[in-house]
Figure (tube, rainbow, N blue to C red):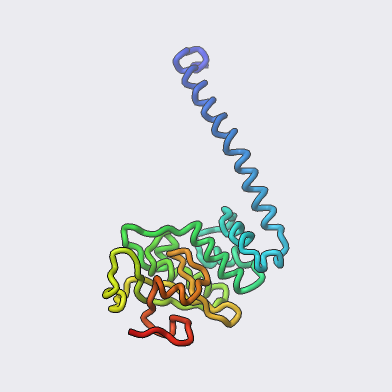
Amino acid sequence: SYYYNDTKNYSRCEKITKQLVDYYSDTIPLYYAMHEERSLLSNIDKEQFRGNTQLVDSFARLKHPYNESSYTRVASYLCERMPGENEKARVIFSWMKANISYDWNYKIYSGPETFKARKGVCDGQATLYKMICQSVGLKIKEVRGFAYGLNVSTKDYYAKPINHEWNIITIDSIEYIVDVTWGDFKQDPYNSLLNRYPQNMRDQLISNPLTN
């Protein structure tokens, strides 16, 4: 053939072949390892996920064989193996942490756009988390308020401008604070007040809400 009769092209062909061999030598074992892990997790009894955060997180981070064009399909696939409300809330949270990044261009604010682009600001992430949780029957709401952090003075903190959004989710009849953007799941209400001040005092989730 032309390749084997031409030294220059033969060398080029040999080089490409070596690159392909090296590539598949690395990726094929990885593919089978991922496939084996997915098979093992998919075959685990439903009750084994109960209270096992590490197992739930591992399941959420897998590359699942479903159509990711629909957030309801994502929710259904993730949650069909979860035994309770806590595991459902956690697996959705962990899936978002693994698949949704922050939009540092500050252009994506809605839940649907965040799902489509796989990135969004806090508004979009909190809305998307609510959308996915509601699609599997969880009670959840969005919370707007003020985030206390870098380059913010104490005076600004008590002025409480709206600059952040997170969620309150009900799990087994108890309300919890979840902030997907910051990676906080079921955060202690008092610790949350060190970083966030909700617009609605009731959303502090403490018996004697703080005031100015």
